[in-house]
Image (cartoon, rainbow, N blue to C red; front, top):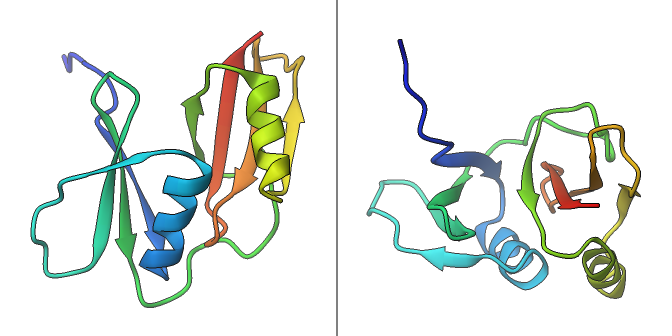
Amino acid sequence: MIRHEGIHHVSLIVTDLERAKRFYEDVIGLREIPRPAFDFPGAWYGIGEGGQQLHLIVHPGETLRGGGIDTRDGHFAIRVADFDETIAWLSEHGIEHRHNRNSITGFAQIFLTDPDRNIIELNAAR
């Protein structure tokens, strides 16, 4: 039997590391953490206090997505402290998003994409 302790990290492909870092630091508010000296570019970010991480990996081709925000497409989710504050922050920064305060999931959801069209869910307790 596999005994799970939690999700350690999610990796995303990005095409422009500096653009992606600006987005994840300046818009999403993540803090960069040390990354081993791999033979390819990328960046690692800590998420919350539980040790979860986001790993950005530079890939010279295209990312897998070409369309807009699709809430049923593959994505990762970050829990945020305040739904309304997060929507206001995204709007202030001109970030296109879709939100649903009364999602049938039992928590409020906000969906957006990063500059490489990776889908991100930000969710909050209602």
